[in-house]
Amino acid sequence: MKSRFFDSFILIAALVLIAPPIFAMGQVPERPAPVAEPSPRTANPPDIEPQSQQIVRMEEEVVRRINEERRRQGLDPLSVNADLARVARAFSRQMSREGFFSHTDPAGRGMVDRLRDAGIRYRISGENISMNVNAPDPVDLAVRGWMRSPGHRENILRGAYTETGVGIWRDGDTYHFTQLFIRPF
Image (cartoon, rainbow, N blue to C red):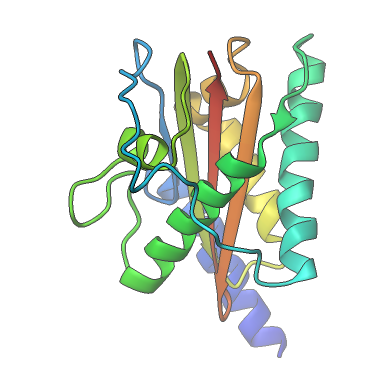
């Protein structure tokens, strides 16, 4: 038991210290993403519920921690947008099930496509993703990793954002996190 914990700790430490860009990627558009009218066929957020109450608490904890970081910098807290959370959760699930870790899915679709398909209109948007394996505290590892990465930190502390949605998907001891940020019209 102790050996598995130690091995997991070493793996996590190596991933956080050596390869943060691989396991915590941020996307900050330089200009507001173009907004396309949603098609009537796809203008609804995915209907994906959290896997468990534990996951709900984890998603809430990410938002709480992010808002704590924003308050320290004199910024307003982000409001939770349930539609954004469903889009984020659907993407975390897709990464888990399809075995990729990227802001763009294997079909080449990115955050702008996912938001448009869900009918979410915005002036500016951003996305943070994280994945961790065998972490004793997956939320802490994700948030700390984002705050150490300039691109992720910029998303978290960007004053223009007013809303967020967090989606976490768990598969065994692997957690995929997606956090979306927007300023709606």
